[in-house]
Each structure stands twice: as C-alpha cells, then as structure tokens.
Length: 110
Image (tube, rainbow, N blue to C red; front, side, top):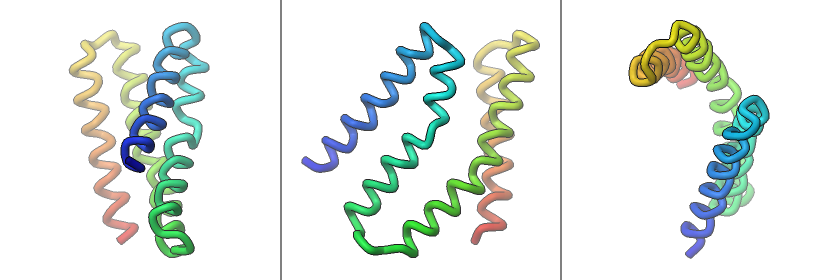
C-alpha cells in the first residue's frame, strides 16, 4: 500500500507540472526542475532506511553531480528545437548527450 501511495503522489506532481506547462511553459519548466522529485526520493529513502546518512549522502551527491548531464540534455534539446528538428531527433540526440554525460558521471563518482 505504501508503494501505491508513493506512486500516486509522484504521479500527481508530474501531471501538475504538465498541466501548468501547457498554460505557462516557462513556469511549468521551473516547477519541473524544482527539487520536487529529489525531495520525494529523499523522503522515500528516509522512510525505508531511517538514520542511514550514508545512503542519503550518496544519493544527494549523485543528484548534485547529476545536474551536469541534465543540463547537457536541455542545452542539446534547446539547440535542436531552435533548428525545428523533429521531436524524435531532438529526444534521441538529447538523450545521447545525456547518456554520455551520465557515463562520465558514473565513472568519476564510483
């Protein structure tokens, strides 16, 4: 039951961001980049392993350094959207850039 509640809360936040983004794209983007997801994960991790500061520290470190590949994803997407490329091309290329950044991320954080 706890997993279902977690999933419903997470889903509600995603749907809210999408709905706000339809009307106010930049505000929707700002809300989507808020640490809402990370906040939820921190809460879920803590509820599953209270007092495990090593787990919390490791997760937080991963999120902090994971911002770099995420920024690369959005820089690539913005660059490609400005060239009015098809969505499939934009997403494929952007995820490719993110994947390369994520590989470097994991290499250095192990």
